[in-house]
Image (cartoon, rainbow, N blue to C red; front, side, top):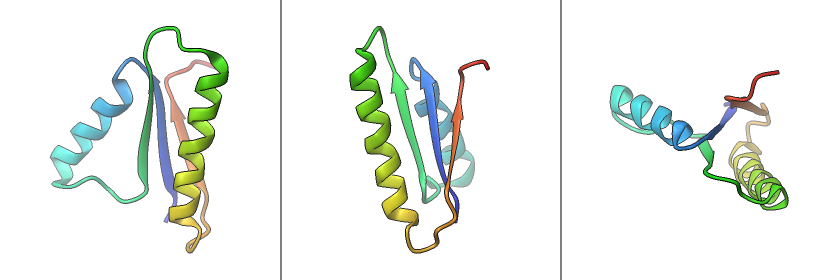
Length: 75
């Protein structure tokens, strides 16, 4: 199974997962979020992103199909 990480500003990532969970009845396995609120330190953001990717990689290690990162950043 491919892991999915949603990275977004404000609480958008968590809100998207709440909507998906509502529709599906449970949160899909291998789905994680990372919300950036306010003006957090870039180094702290990078650490948080790496930690979340490592968590998903550990979950998906047995399947080995990778991680899809979705973000609200243009470009």
